[in-house]
Length: 403
Image (cartoon, rainbow, N blue to C red; front, side):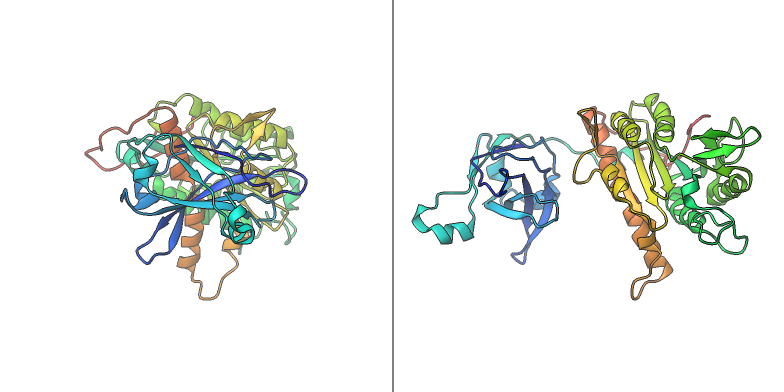
């Protein structure tokens, strides 16, 4: 579906408006539930939004005549978005190409009376109904997921001998990195049948010559990054913590490019790569990281950043790209492939929380965007799922990441 607007109301004092659309479906009780939100377009009264796809079951439960409400808002950075206007339609009407809808703002209409005409017009420039395949369709068809874990070994985490350090080397109690590795690893390993994970570190000085590395194998091997299950990753982490020197700078780009090299070789729809970065968030190569993300967005790859500690994670929110898509030198990322999860939000207990409920909330947040990111890659390249495998699924690291 491709939509544009004309003649929208001006809402910004020093500019025009930053419009975006929100779609809602009618429930059986007469209330509406949000189903989709477009990106906002800066400083225009004649926006043209990117083409988008919404599953019919999401938009209207498959009912062509079910009411769909569309609201147009002026985006504000503080979250207090202002309504421009709204209209009602249904999928049967939307399927008629070339239709248009007047935006009505009830408050302005009431205030201006007969002088009020509308608050702009929304035009449907293109509409197509096409099969939409799910994440599960591809997985049952044999697509393999490959998860790689990367751990931040930079000095901004604090001296491992200091109890305040995020890497505090305490033999009797896990530090924040160990807790995050176990919690996130136990979620991800359910998606991997052989439980073998490449585990890398970055930002440390390595023995014996003290060279700084931004992509070393946690287990100390030079040609085999694989660790067996979560316990293997934790054992490799402890090995590195006791042998390397925390240093810096905190560069994400090398580790992203490391995984991207292998994703580049397997773009045909049989493999998808997930990079988990556990970090304190004090990044020092923001431009290079943005460039790496823009490049990786063209590949079968997603990035999950787990923020430990209580630092300012503003840069991580920028990389997440939910509000403003990551770009570099004027080139915007083809897809949103980054999900940022502040780990402390899932270690601070809420009233009534249990270990199981906390883990469930963390799992939901960590995996929230993977299915959509995965299917957006496949769809953009016209890759259809293969027929389901006869013997189980292939949620495996399989060929994984060679050294």
